[in-house]
Every structure is written in C-alpha cells, then in structure tokens.
Image (cartoon, rainbow, N blue to C red):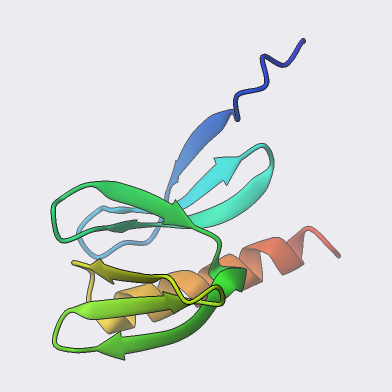
Length: 93
C-alpha cells in the first residue's frame, strides 16, 4: 500500500468515563485525545506533557512551552497519560 504522505488515523475506544476516545493511533504511534474548551478535539503525544494543572479547567503544558486548556478533568487526563504509557510499553514486551 502506497503512502500519500498524510498520516493514517485509527480511533480506538477506550475507558473514558463519558465514552470519549482515549487513544488515537497515528501511523502506529499512540497518542491521547482531549477536547479543547471550544469543543474541538485534539490529539497529543503524552510523552511531551511537562505539567498538568487544574485551574479550574485542566491546563496541559507541553515540553515546548505550549499550553492547552481542555474540558476533561485533571484525573481523566492523568489516567489517559498512564494508559498511554502502559499501551506503548506493552508493545516492547
């Protein structure tokens, strides 16, 4: 199968409290999906998360200094990041 240069996406339903998408597979790399305050869904690499804050909205600060405010509660984002880590480490065994 030839690649068009665009990433291939496959959504995997996870353990989200409200049925949210927990993981997104992009060209074989697993990322976590979150929802910005404007309702748009974005996916981020959990390996790039530097800091999570509850302000009272959840603010994700990435290693490059970018900040993302999301609707999901802090506990949900932490759980997704932990599940992400478990998921990528499962492939190594």
